[in-house]
Length: 284
Image 1 (cartoon, rainbow, N blue to C red):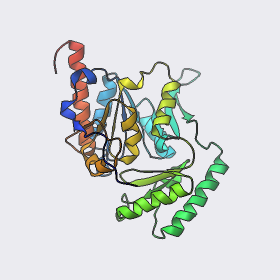
Image 2: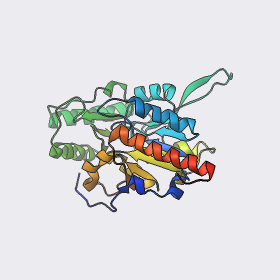
Image 3: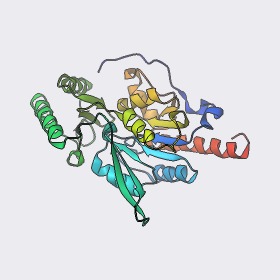
Image 4: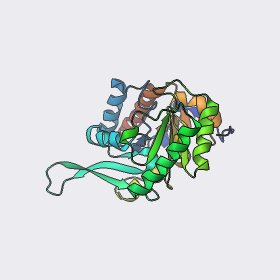
């Protein structure tokens, strides 16, 4: 990955104009090191999800985490849907045909390799090339629950890799015709023409009741969130995005003072305060 200067310097989240925040109707969020903190989902961060839903906002995580985890999140978290594996699919709950409760459903994003045999063959060939180049490689502990990508662990459960090795891994994947994105813990690599933006936009396009992108805010923490920072007019980075800022062509518009889950809580507090003040016709 090449170093590049930022197109704009993120402003403090405290400086986000109230009139902009009053337009927000939905929150998109990354999970690892944005909602979570040091591998844990804190009570405060999880409560923030519930508070956003209780206030009437739409909530949609957009993550690199696998299908197996997204199944759980869609069922048990206070969210409307979840876009997984960096945009390959969207899971959500819908009413059952008999009217008796909800049932899990999913959308495949156009551009994903939907033939399982073809997809697995290409991924196995890429996996062999990665293992040949990096004999010490460990794939993510959640790899068994993935459908569309490989996740190479560079710091979650292993000793952190040097940045040069991470960059070389990304280049190797791209040389094999795959996409590769760096999160805060993994390099995710896949075949197919999809990403987080395309996954979310496909979900929006199939749900006419949802607001357009100008009424959503995205919050993230790492380079694989860059397409979302670029796409949304309202984008926030939690404070730990700072270590990647000089590597982003499209940084977030604003940045919180707190890191990870506490940064997510900080974002939530201000969005809800603005929403409450707007509904009452007062200043927060």
